[in-house]
Length: 303
View (tube, rainbow, N blue to C red):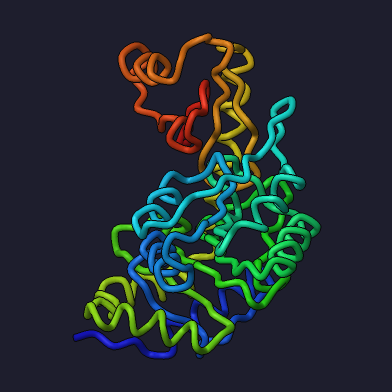
């Protein structure tokens, strides 16, 4: 059986402080198998049966799954697109917050690559406080930010936000299955830890302990080089589409390694669009319709 030294969580805390100006308390940190399993557990443990959970679409498809798996109802605050830029519909956000028993935030946003500004985070959390809606923030892409933008940890704005962090995206270590969840409420942490312990899956595997700690303590130079490489790849996609396939319009992300493609000028429905990319372009992209039900004309590209 493996055990965790304090050095494991200290590596996460030091990394967050160095990269993002946030020093979480290691005594408030919990281990879990991954961000998606953590979100699933948080929905189960901290929202009422048959309750409503708000997400901002288009968004990572598993957000739907972790809500509906526990017989909760998804309510969508659909982000609004105008001339290639996406923003929050604030009137709708407040209307949905009135109904919600939990809000799952994606920060930075997948698939749009939005790095939320302080004013947006403050407004979202203020509305959630107004209606007593707890917030959990998926910040797994927080290290993959460029174009002069800066990720702001949600807990710096509102310490009550439950934050899911991991270096698995940062260093391509997802196969080792580990993430860290940061709580401010000790009772919530106890409930969360007990949930995993009852299934006897509350221990890291030995490989993840050394790999995560080593990456966080020694991987900063590598990450800085990666960010420049990712930024160049995104520039290439943008320029290539502009010159050769102007009917496909990529949204320029400020975070993640993902590009959201607006393919509406191809005049194909979502099924036809997906088939076109697989059968004609020989590209297995992510179907945009999975990120918002009923959405037509978009695909997600991994650069």
